[in-house]
Length: 631
Image 1 (cartoon, rainbow, N blue to C red):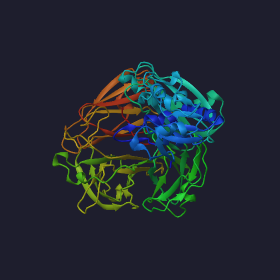
Image 2: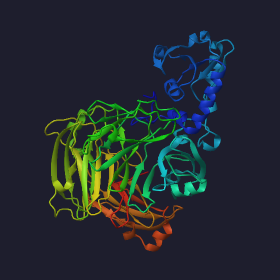
Image 3: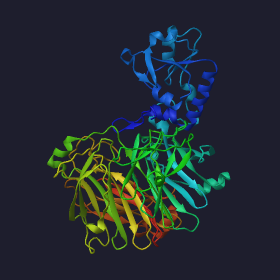
Image 4: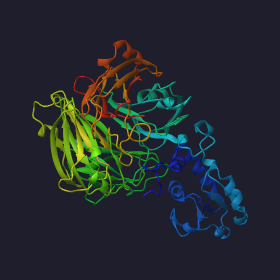
């Protein structure tokens, strides 16, 4: 496992990790290491405790020793070396002393009396990003300097990919935002690199693989796109929606969204295939170091018998892994866990069935989370507590299936219930699932719970904790949602986690808002426009842990490519209700045409927090669906 710290819910992202792992910085780090190794061994002075990730991401440094000034840190293992007292540095025999820190001029002066004879002092400043990629030059380790993400990107004569986002940083005061891109091939080589300004104000932004391929004269590729937003403010995460669509007249279409750019020890929520399906996990190395053979493994969830993936995957390379090669007898609704060793950023998987392909992502399985006894004794003021809402699509046309998924290493059971609501917020059903074990293989088809005549135009349901038969809870409740067209067989799937919604009382960090501290009583959701003339749509859900406003006051704002609002509409959603929103039903055809495919709808509500799923439909059985993102 890579010895790196990436992300936790209390502190957010580890900026040092991003400063070391950025592909441009990684190139400079490799050059620095080569120059050091040419002339002798290197002693590392580690004032901030980053020797571990430094050596994980540059394992070829010829290390003479790790030295620390903190007496309590002496004897700790850092990067595979036992930390020594800084007083011992003069006897290290090192040709160089690398201060594992940026902007370490003062430290350089302070340790000069303790240098080995003739040793040269170097800091990490030579691996800093060039000035044109730095947002805040006065503080290099400011999170805004590393607003980055990876994108599964493919254009192979069968499929194309299309990223859609918005310059949401303009709403936080950013003046001139630009995007730096680096496209990696399947083998990890650089295919193309370019910069482009973001639209002015809060304008929409699209990158289509067909246009990239034509611009750079590329052959077919399947790889990953690294994207870095420069000049940002307010947010240090690049959020986007990604369409994958067929270009060879087949019926494939899917979308997935991403906001999490942090490698994890484990990922969960990978479905085993149906008997007539093929499930491929796309392994994409997120670092400039090779993933050793056997460093990744797959396991049936809860089995604790991981099977190594015997593949060596080069830096930034992409490799398809057919899960049936490792578990040939395993079928849906069994679940698979990926032990990723912190080498990967939220991997995607592709399901192929009856000539159709769909892509979704698996989620971070947290290793830091333990059961929280307080959830069992929540104040009545918090009502039903944690909720995981999901749409039930119009039942005349679609099947809706839900599968709870463990998302913490310590999660041994899940005591759950499903509450079902009609669009007007009336609860029409409760169904107790029991205390599900970690290795359960239950997927609930809502057809099995609901009478045929119920929810013909759709509604929604919520997974909630139910302790009637005991069990534990950690608040990190997740599930996989699968939707199938009853006629075409086309399917889409998504996954997400629970929160507390719309209660004035708080519990720890819940309920969350898209901006600001709890309680979370506001909404800012992004709905992209259609694709190739097809309609975009979303299902908005107004979940409530306790009683809240009877109706939402929800604004739909149609923006064009430059962020200009073309038209505004107001809708009202019942508390604990839901509504399907099609831009074509709310805005004029002229304004939708003027907005263009890079335009978008911003869904705003200052009275409550809504939850949503967005997609595209061609009206003939092909559709996509994934959860929305906010900013």
